[in-house]
Image (tube, rainbow, N blue to C red; front, side, top):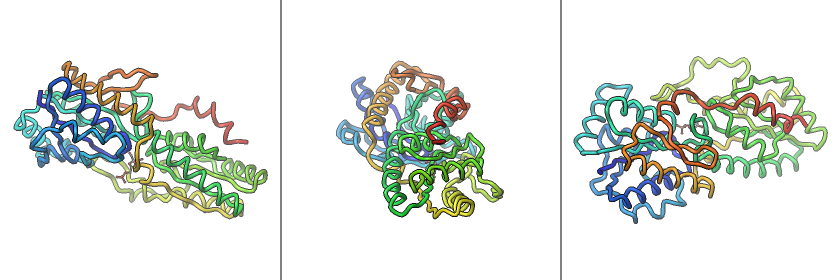
Length: 343
Ligand code: F6P
């Protein structure tokens, strides 16, 4: 088979090991895999390698962050001409299948293409961990690790200067990154998009922690709803997602805390640092297993499927089911762990 492979959406640690697993397994089957560069844009323009990927091209990808295939947030379904170009280029290059490695948006395009008669297989990635049908996505563990390291460092300053520090983390409209970072970092309060912010409760939590140990750490998800904020001017990306990075969530919450409690408060943002660097061992293993399983799907003609982690097993699920609903934090989970933030 002649297979095209692409990575779309925000890069994250684990994409390279996943591509590596896919290519190694495909070569073992006797297939050829061609790199489509820059996500779906690579099929619009096209930007496709002339030679197939070799073992040497992918072998060292195991420890490299980002995506060697490059990425973009191109949505060909927004523009009929782009969509036609994608379909024409798949045919012109004689691709028997496309392996699409990405999050909700990239996989959404793969799902629609499958319905339009093209052979696609999806491999889920996102540091946000907000994809349904899979317990974890690679990129998430690495991002949380960066935040935990940041919290450990911020605690040193918070304790030394007797301050409150608010750390703003990514995650879009799901609080997974914030919640796991806050638990693993031992934060004193966490703010999640799923739980409406209660300023009185937040300030009480901060004050309580401060009274006890003379500092406090708060983790805030970039997606939390801010009180008294006009968001009508928010900018959208090609998939209609609100750009959350310029909402100054951490800074705003720090100001609120300082005003209310009169405690000296600072904020920090880990931002894109969360998406860079070498993948953790967990993400390398998860990504490698998913990549290999995705190659198996292609080989067996099991199209329209996404590979997924369920418990400790790698399984498959219809891509459509995975992109239909965002996986957010269940209330029961929050209820179970909130004691950690009300000490
Ligand atoms: O979806 C991954 C993510 O890192 C989100 O957590 C964040 O809101 C967004 O991408 C940032 O996108 P960009 O890299 O386009 O600024």
